[in-house]
Length: 118
Image (tube, rainbow, N blue to C red; front, side, top):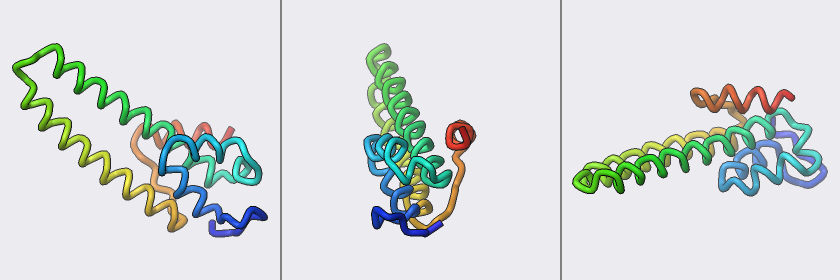
């Protein structure tokens, strides 16, 4: 998967960069030659779905925190643990993409694969 494109950026590098934020993921789905690479497309879509899932979890934990004020300590602790778990998963897929590996996350990996193969 490390073939270099005319842009000078390899598919592996593009796939890894797609995980930095949602912006490069969207860009790689739009620009040539990356939008034609199933490897880059998979990681770009998985990145987008990952960041959306991260935001949803963050919002849900925050909503619980506001609805049950006595649970502030519990939700704060849960939010920290969830944040740490999300960071570890993000780091694994980020490094794996640079290494040319395709780690498919549960649920969102299947969605990303469907989108990448369209």
